[in-house]
Amino acid sequence: MAATPETAAKPKPLHGTPLVLLTIAVAFSTFMEVLDMTIVNVSVPHIAGSLAVSPNEGTWTISSYSLASAIMQPLTGWIARRFGEVRTFVTSVILFVLFSMLCGMATSMPMLVFARLMQGAGSGPMVALSLTLLLSSYPKERQGIALAMWAMTVVIAPIFGPILGGWITDNFSWPWIFYINAPVGVAAALITWSLLHKRETKTVKSPIDVVGLVLLVAGVGCLQFMLDNGNDHDWFASNLILTLGLIALVCLTFLVVWEIHAKHPVIDLTLFKQRNFTVGVISLSLGMFAFFGINVVFPLWLQTTLGYTATWAGLAAAPSGVLAFVFSPFVGRNMHKFDLRILVTFAFIVFGATSYWFSTFDSAASFGTLVVPRFAMGLAIPFFFIPLNQIYLSGLPAAEIANASGLSNFFRTLGSSVSTAVMVTLWQHRSIYHHATLTESVSHAQPGATQYLQQLSHLGMGATQQLGYIDQIINREGYTLAVNDVFYGCAVLFVVLLPVLWFARPPFGSAGGGPGH
Image 1 (cartoon, rainbow, N blue to C red):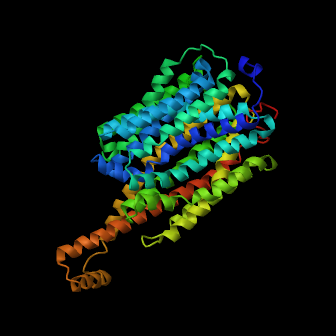
Image 2: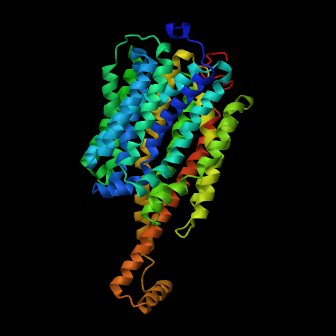
């Protein structure tokens, strides 16, 4: 691709204190955005109770945010070209903060879902542009470190999210999980603007693809609404769910056809002609689908089934951050020495093994027992995120980085969003199945069941109390067996992804190094 005005007049890299400050500001804004995808996870039961809805409906606060963020991310390239990368990034941070405050003030579930939608839409360009701004501000030889710093925030935020969310929810109230964004966001916006406003990229008045945008919003919106509500409406037995599914299918099919031929596409599908981009995005999206599913279902199971508080559920989820934090700088500094496919293969093997490990636990598992595989899982996280970002950006010219980053983040976020709906639904369905199967064993024809009922009657329980108590046990075991099924499914997905990864073609070079690097 020929050099563009943006690449031709590229400013010199930053050094010293300004580079450190910019890295902190951009890292914290990225941290804040990704944090808000997971900080709500452990607070869902509290939010649902506070707003008088079921925990299932409470998960809309997770998926509505992911949905809006996913829709906005492919638009990042167009918005950045139209208004400038720095201006777009800072505006995105400010909008994110404003709608975070509105989330905290919500007094009903529809109001909270609307505020989360707007918060997600405001944050859409933030993550993609944070990587673009970092790469353009770092010297070429240190871009691996920039990538590691960026990936570290994307990696660590989902880990700290549950702890922070749990602690704030238990000690203050759930609105504060949104209010804490204000000081961080304002500081990040001020620092970024003061350092980079004179390094603004050139703007181009290119038309927006209205048809593509409408098809994208309608298709992804209907898909997400169908996934969120399908379980409550018995899926395709409901005319509403069937209609939403058909609209999503038609819109997304037409979107692909339209974007291939559009003069100014809202989603630049030509990026998928790049083999490494395609392989990297598929691996990242499906890997994120499994990884995020585990992070959503795990704290829900701990709180709704095992009686954990939000704080303890967060603490049980947190240990995966330790090894991720330790190894991220090492991976960033040294990944040029390795075949990146080997690093990601290692990550998928560790993810698969720990997911399988989780699938073996019963409802009597102690806190210590649950923490060990979470700790081990952390080793895989930097080997997953950092090399995959390098793989999908390899061979692309600098002018394409914002587009590629936006599109890959779209699929990553969509993977997370769809995962929330699918994993919670799968967990519910499997728990109903296991409840029914276990109930068949509670009859006078089963000696074990008869003996247990006799023990309960010796404790002074009446017949109704006995059945109620046994139903509680069956519920707990049903939900636990169901969560085992979810984790086992995730383990299988990680294994299936292993051969996909090896379709990527080296050399992987520097991020945005252009062809031949």
